[in-house]
Image (cartoon, rainbow over all chains, first blue to last red; front, side):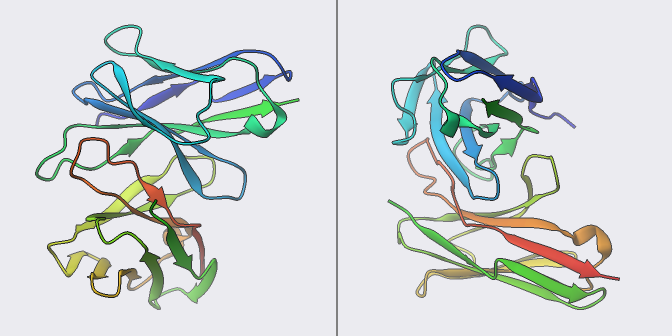
Length: 116
Length: 114
């Protein structure tokens, strides 16, 4: 069964450093998302991406964050200058299309980011 | 924006008994309500979903009910088994305009007691 993959599984970085989290969505999917989950809290929406541009972003997704689909398979989340409060599990998700029974978002296993 | 409340935060049931988790949402425009199961160290996995044109949906031991008037939906797990132990999240979304961000509840840690 196709699945969303994410790398790395864990990332430790120093405050102020840049990190890039990578995702490979399911191959025929058109909509891509990043969510984050701070330890013990709910999953929160960060950004959605469709047709090579951001569709929607939350207030969390400030100028320090960016997303990119550099080729036909990868979808990346970059944090330019990490802060302590960026420590969280970051999930990538993808979805096939909008209509009918294709609303399901499939989540990857996550990248645990720890900012020291 | 949408706000989803979920109760209870923890739930322990004897193996074989039923478990019920309840969620409420605030935005009447929401029309898609998935339930995700999250096991330790893994990403959320969809277990069942329901759309606003349906009041109830069942898949083997799992069922979801939706009351649009009350803006309330519930997950029912019958004949619980140890492998049902996990954190369960409800979510709500508006599937009309192509973005469909999910707004999640705060999660319920379900423990099945053998």
